[in-house]
Image 1 (cartoon, helix red, strand yellow):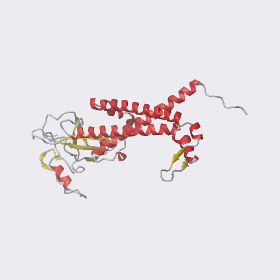
Image 2 (tube, rainbow, N blue to C red):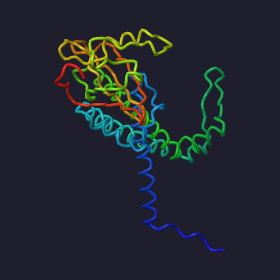
Image 3 (cartoon, rainbow, N blue to C red):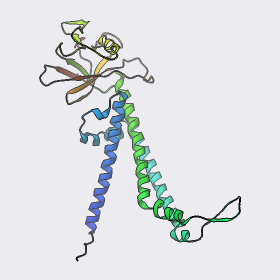
Image 4 (cartoon, rainbow, N blue to C red):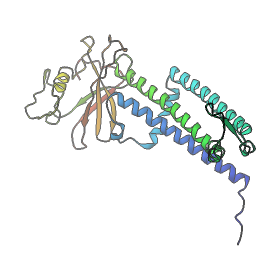
Length: 288
């Protein structure tokens, strides 16, 4: 029976590179998922209900690490801290192995009972557990991975929440201004373009739940730059047949307040004659 050939140095190097690349990809995906979970969670949107591409989760971490000066500073601080912690763990484990080696546990390790003043031997099973389990490399690796994941969770969730709050306020929002036009029979919100000063009738629509939310939005369903502190409608997300719009919190309101703008989710259809306009700034006209 032929023996299995030993792997060449190139094969070992390739296997090590693939392993490290896989771990790096897992860290990136985890960071991107937590960032979006925190970002959309601010708007009370469950990320599991959004049909987002899996590849995009590998790109989102760029916003976590390089999105702003503060984000880059936090990422660098976290990197330096993790390097120090991992080095300290490695030094501690190495020192423990040297101090509590196998030869040490083969001796009669004694501790004393202060009440009976009698030597009590530490059970052999405890010795074997400490040597064969706690000090094994894979256990140390698991501890390091858990520390890294916990750090990435904190960094991504913090940055996602901060970016969501930034986009919720009109003065700092990076979301595009939106003008959405649809047929009156398919859209209960909005104004009639021929009569923009009047709310749309709701005779043909039925509702359930807190209908006061709809009434509150009826008076704020257009962006009017002539009215100070008027909400500006922005597009939060567009995925498959759904678009999500938010009225950004007007200027003059402190961002220290725990405010969350309502979200309007609308389902579009390829057969409808909907029109959507996006702009990075307010339109020149008063009415959309």
